[in-house]
Figure 1 (cartoon, rainbow, N blue to C red):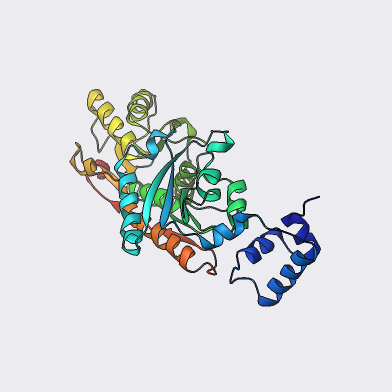
Figure 2 (figure 1 turned 60 degrees about the horizontal axis):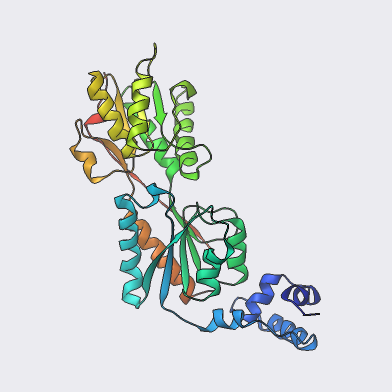
Length: 340
């Protein structure tokens, strides 16, 4: 019967991850523990797979960036390009290349899974992923292999290194701004229930309304894929109500562009009758009519931070995992001018 890493861990009274780190000669494991585990391996005639030594010794000078191409919003916007350039600005001077890898979060084919294609085959030295792609199972496997990875987006499922914008704070900032402009009936348009990004942004919106003693009225809210079609349809629907909202927060600028089109067709004064503010400032946001108040999220800086973190994980594997919040900034324009 073949001896496995689980057998070694049980005999040594340590976790499987510790045995994996011993195989990789990780500096985070003490010399005494390494000596004890290695002696048990010898006594039990354990022969490690070539995987552990390959992961420890080979270098490809390549960083993998995962993207789910089944989600158009993940790549059909300028933010994705900014992220890539930010990462490249860090890893390029260190002689590393960036490889963008298509994954499908719903793909069940084991042979095509990125763990096998990239990590197990040792085609990359480090991995940058999105928290919408990373699963608890994959995170645990990466941890057992001591493989460097960074999540763009807060990841609380396991010990991980991640960087994210404080989207809950962003929701608070946009809501607080509209309240300061004398708006009181604030709707929220866009976002799919259960989606992490939407959840954080909506939580900030809700919390700020509650602190102001105002309800987050679900009658005014609209869920759905955050695009211009949703923005147009929902403003048309909301403004037909007997008591319509006096302002809206849009999940992104695409939703807001659709909302502005509906406002124009309805002959509504914006701002005034309807104040509008949105997440994710885009180049066109300053040139709409009216110009769009937006939350600026520096996606280039997000890429830079992710790039620095993955290089730190590669060059200093003993570093503790950490999460870093980046702060958004509100850019006030005409669309949210005071209704008073």
